[in-house]
Image 1 (cartoon, rainbow, N blue to C red):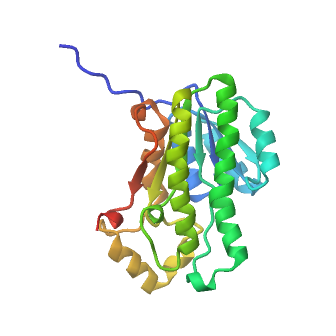
Image 2 (image 1 turned 90 degrees about the vertical axis):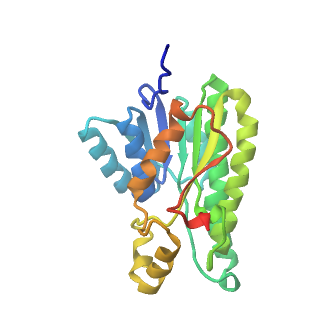
Amino acid sequence: MTLPVTPSFSLEGRRALVTGAGRGIGLAAAAALAQAGAEVTLVARTASEIEAAEAELEAAGHKAQAVTLDVSDLAAVSAFFESRDPFHVLVNNAGTNRPKPMWDASEDDFDAVLGLNVKSAFFVAQACVKRMMGTGTQGSLIHMGSQMGHVGGPNRSLYCASKWAMEGMNKAFALDLAPHGIRSNTIAPTFIETPLTRPFFEDEAFRASVLSKIKLGRIGQPEDLMGAVLFLACDASALMTGTSLVVDGGWTAE
């Protein structure tokens, strides 16, 4: 009898890109990929954060490069991908939120949330796969969605609209890209404690309402997503495309 061999979780020899990589979920994703052996490019608008992350990763013996890039500048995004070797892994993580009741949402709010979470995510993925397809490079796109791309939530109309859109885009991407050996999936986290979200949890009523929905009884941490990022990036998930890994502590099970 020959025992099956688990597909490799190693990313040695692969190039990965993470947007919004300076802190929180993006930084955790970059660390997960680097620790698995990938050469990671960290992208964000704020140079100081990604440069500090690059230094820490390199000090730990990993391969990392910081590049300052505003993913809402589509011309700059296109030029960035055209000027570099193709990536094997993209973590489409840059995003924003402006929580408020739907009747208070302004056109500026709409454009800010949908512009970054949908438009920028779409064209970052497009520019990435054009370079991959042009060189015959196979790989994995990982889009950072949300449990709010599977359910609704109060004061989250714009965010839900953007994350449901991402889920639809992801499924269509998967169908377009499958013949080229490029997979596309989302990760859908529950509330994760990051520098962006931490101020919200100082409101005890809000914190209690969130914890009442997370059946495992705690707020998520960036580390809770690192395994999902690595899994979708590596050969262990080679038959997965067009779907979503929901990392929500049971929120959407009810």
